[in-house]
Length: 267
Image 1: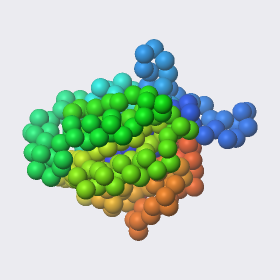
Image 2 (image 1 turned 90 degrees about the horizontal axis):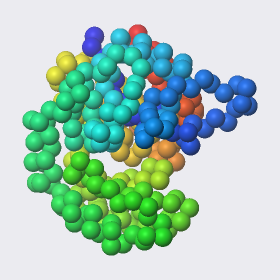
Image 3 (image 1 turned 180 degrees about the horizontal axis):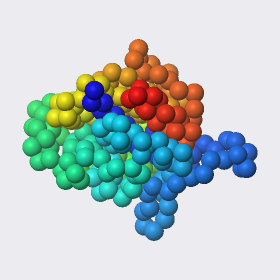
Image 4 (image 1 turned 120 degrees about the vertical axis):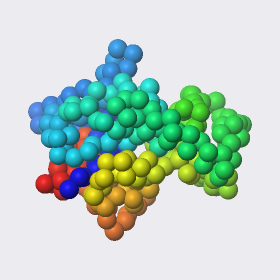
């Protein structure tokens, strides 16, 4: 049986220093492996145990990193194990095949967005007009597909994200708050659509998935089995689904547990 494993990366398999959640005594903290360097600084980690599990998973299944990151942001990650043949970037906007974006898939995505959603410029301009420089640090557009803000969470007005979500909903967009980033993403731009395409190409008979944020909900619902960690947007809102297991582990320990569950299911 061909098993496809589609997993979110940030705060699911890999973790920034701020997201590690090392709550145990220092002497019992796990050994960590740096898997991403940015501007000469270490940025993302997984445990050494998780590294070994991911290497085993690469041999047991079709492992597909599935991320909202842009292609450039994804390509600076150096995951252990065999190089994945497929990867999904920009929340499904790009399918990479051996590291190269598939132009046919991308053209299909663009055509659907043009038909079903308000244009990116309208959303970007609304976010710029309604946000405040006192709590916004950066305005960003990713791959000309979606927009996000980098904010100071402690200064972010409590209702601003909710109001943005209501406005975006009526224009075919969805809003997600992840750490210090507020994403506005077109509804048809989904990880699940890209995963279904890769499952078709590989002939996968079983799909497993993991993720922590609202942008991962469609991915988890599309999989035969899914897992979410004890932290993140889905955990905070109590999101649940029949085939999705809510794990108690938080932080980098959750990444290790997710990989154990993937391998157990593969075997």
